[in-house]
Image (cartoon, rainbow over all chains, first blue to last red; front, side, top):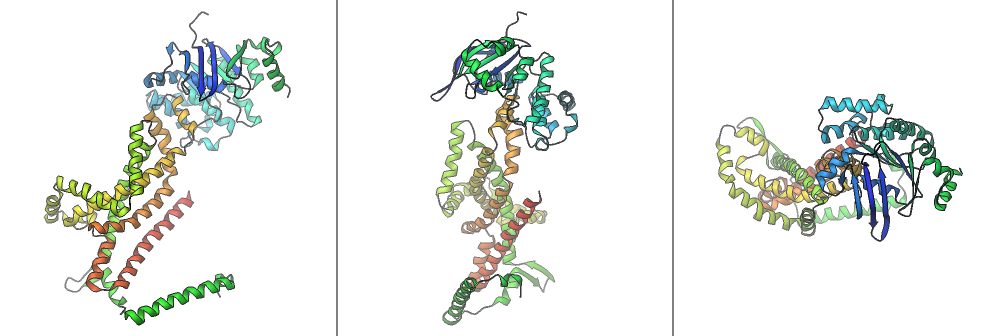
Length: 247
Length: 290
């Protein structure tokens, strides 16, 4: 396949005051590709994917998403965010709305669907994440794993072309990680383009097309998972893998 | 013996004795030096009076004043809630000018004594507005018309309507500053993740406020808002200074004409206390219920 990549980051940088969170990062993500980003905490993984939907502004280099150069120009970035779904570590569900309303509010208010269509979309994706029976509950009544699946469904309701996951299982109790990863694996099988920041190496091995290893705001290594897990090309990736695979 | 008496220790008895002693001393001074003649029996007539000639009860000075205070507080409360919410949102706006304007309003009101603010609002704002709208003539017209009864239920004596509007405006604008601070605190208490989630599904700044932030913020600020409403009732007494005929103003009138200084003021104090304390208990109960 020789399509134009969905996301093209060309030498982007981002600083918070004196701290360089990203330095000279270049990465392309193609249609239907699954990229897993890993690295020690503070290495800029989250900042990188938050740049991909404009939650952070990169301050150097160029970033093109879906063929459009990313700027902070309001109408354009709103259009872009509809095509790029985001799942957060802390779920960030809307606590004052029911599960169904959480899923419907985007389609209703942003995509301007009518009520029936928005509800149909919401129920479809709630089915997809396997919790249709929780539709009328409030987020606070659900377990962490269920909440995160609702958050995934909420992002999917916008019918995005790319899904970004920012450490989706890091805030979960261990017994709930599996159910969220299962949903993500299924999503990968449907051909969704995904960029996932995670420490779940089992998941990475299973679905990743490419592994991206970051450290101190730079991309240190990009390789296919087979190579990455068995024979990492850089020492730093090897040290990192030793540390997290030990357990 | 009631149970609470058993819990009193010698220190409690000492404090109570000193207090009773002090009260007795003040009472004796009043009796002895002022030679004050208590006329409590006259007070009920100034609240509710039976008119022999028309065979009906009517609200006299103090009750009229209480009704006026209630009306003014309800309208001023609504005005303060609306304007205060706008101020609170403006305080969190991305636009610097908007933010600074809201901040300036708050700091002016916070750092000038209420009485001075009341006079400034009255002379510079409500008087001008009332003249510009020719409200005096309009209200007199209503007072003479057939539908005067309905209007009077909502606004009291229509000939005093412009003064009521002044009171509501002045009090509402004054309280709005504090309501604004409450709303701002409510908005800022919503975690950042909520804004990010709203933005991540493509919401505009307005939609984010309208559908995500405000519904959560407003439900959080209900308890402090209820307390602010009680403050508003207490503060409403200062608009007697601009001749709005509410409870305090009526009490001044009553004292001037009857010289029942202590009886009248104690009665008025009791009215305010029962009203404010009652509301405070009510709000607390409502709060605990959910």
